[in-house]
Amino acid sequence: MSLKLRLTVRPERRLRLHYVPEQGVLPIRRPRTVLAVLLVVWVALLLLPSRPISFPFQAVSFQTVSGPISPIPELPQPWPQSVAVDAARAVSARFTSGSTLDATLRGAGVSGSNLTSMLTVLSDAVDVRRIRPGQEYQLYFDATDELIGFRYQISRQTAWFVARDDGNWAALQVAIPIQSRIAFVSAEIVDSLHRALAAHAPTNGSVNDLVIKVGDIYGWDVDFQYDLRYGDRLDLVVEERFVEDKFIGYGEILSAEFRVNGLVLPVVRFRDPDGIGSYFTPDGASLRRAFLRSPVKHSRISSRFSMRRVHPVTGIARAHRGVDYVADPGTPVQATADGVVAEARYGAEPGRFVRLRHGGSYTSVYMHLSRIENGIAPGTEVKQGAILGYVGKTGNATGYHLHYGLEQGGRYVDPLRLQFPAAAPVPTNHWGRFVAQRDEVIEALRTGQANSAAAVAGAGGL
Image: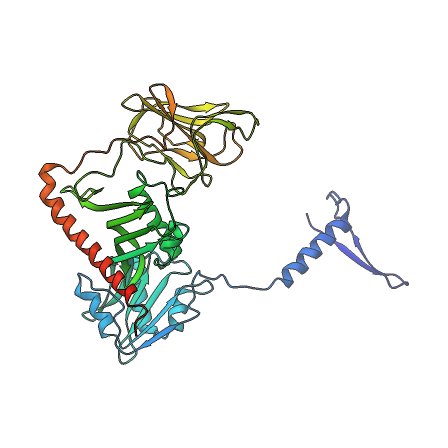
């Protein structure tokens, strides 16, 4: 169908457009409306700015380092270690959105021929489409300002190097090794363990990590909400982990001594011949118990075991045969002991819940779950610490929390007051290995404590 228009000008000087359909063509209903829409679309297309499609990276800032540099850690390969050592100048920056990789490197001073050769090798090894804003890269130049190496950081511990090797460009993916250093940390409790350790940990994330590690070790013997007192002290010998001299977090706690609520609780970490690490007292007794103290990490207790508690929903005073742990929705809920799943379903009062049968006539129940973990079904065997589900507020609940109950011989008991037996001590055939590891980490702990005491004693001296 074609469209014909006839233009007429009347004496009153009003411009009018008339639609004249061809013969045999059905006329358009409401032609003025259709024409107005076409004109608006045409004008809009004319006014839209033309913008080039950008590739997702551009170097907008550079940090130039003059003189010999060696930003690459000691690697098993002599190449490309030597490239960084021999470099006279380096450019370090991050990819940001707005330009092509070619333009980014040209802006950093890479010549055309060098750039083409290097990019050919790089594109054969690396999918450049996966480069994202924020990822780091470095360029290495020789004394004549010729490019001799390019480093693209995929992750904290993985990097691609494209560098000259015997005159030709070559690409290599390198795993950046983690460096471990032993550190002594001493924290005095003022109001909370988190705040006490925050004075020593470099980042907030590492504080949380260290608190979790301490909680996992002492969780059977210390109630971190009610047992801590002003002036209690925690001393640790812990691994600090670094990548290229940048702190990335804490490794294992090797030894510790917690002076809490009048008790002194020393522990050491023992790694058996199979590489499995566990915590023991210096005389070889295990800190692990048959049941975990808490089924939820990062939580606080909102309601304890009680035979007469006013229910927050019904307002009726009745027994609360368990412990309520408040935690963020979706927080994992773990089995407190080895067992077999007896029930995993939905109920009007408990919401989604899981019930486990344990040895010794014990049964545990986990209520108000947002969802039950895949594979958790009646008859399933689970190990201590296995994920059963996630914190929710299903059933008769006012907020996000886990209700944890423990039965012994068919009667609910207070899980916070029971004294569970310890796991097996250090095996006799591993005793010599245990003593050697124990003496080493205890000596590091005592040395740190002595140096810390000397520093405090000399703080007021001249």
